[in-house]
Image (cartoon, rainbow, N blue to C red; front, side, top):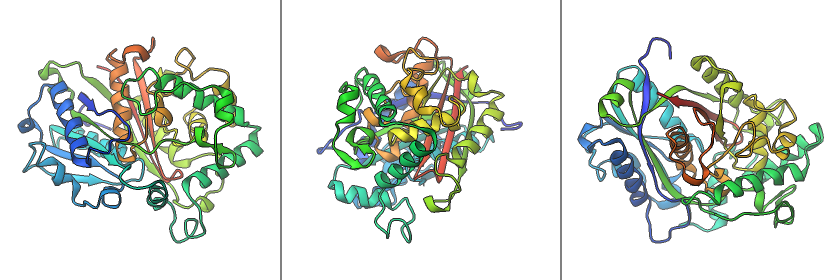
Length: 389
């Protein structure tokens, strides 16, 4: 961030994630925003801007112009209200832009909210809407969906590095174990390796247990200057770095589909800005839209050696008691994946862990956390590093 001023997360709030037929998109967002402002001890009048992360609210719910639609009802009428879209990295991107705006002195306090209401549509429609984050003129027109694209990625990783279905299943088992301890998770259900392997086939080699959930939910954080956070007298968390990078949308434009250049680029920028390396990270929230995505992220972020992510996970290195705990929240796999909310929800988990407020899933080492929020099949990525003040 160069000479820009230090930034902090002064408060956080989120809804439970799940399938809520009686809730609409706005009510979810308003609940998360209210919880966040209460946590930060801030009134709506003290907020300078509203940044909304949302992928496909218009397609899922029929409502567009979502930022002021939510901001006005949250008591923020009159402030700049902007929606950010970067597929599943939408609210990670909103967070990135908020941190930079506060660091540059453009705003003093920005309420960043991520929300998605997905269960109002049937599974086939949801799959089609999600697929629009891919190359609609090419791979999607040819019949691809994100499960099939990530299945190709998994198959290639298996061919190239000897990764097995058992390695994929180990990620699912670990994330379900963590999610069972999270009272706000969508699917609080422990599973065995045998259950994961015997799951209903989705796209070979991926089963139902390798794929994230269709969820409703919202999350919010208050991004402010570190000085303002101290004045508020709250238990704030320092934003050490946040970086965003991009790559081709279409999978066939990539030289190697077993690694994501956008993840590596965002990570390198974030590590450099924070003055850190992968070894300095105590724990991480990684974007496990599919189990293979967590395995590849662990490699691209430098936690595991290239091609060793599957074996690294199966050896227990990413468990809550492991060398580098990954997805203590349960991840997208168990916590749920309301796509527009996921990036900010990751920041909420980092904040809760660093503040020592994660309850049963609280980690022993929690001073520095990293969040990796992926959009599409690697076309967008936001990497954030948070630490104690």
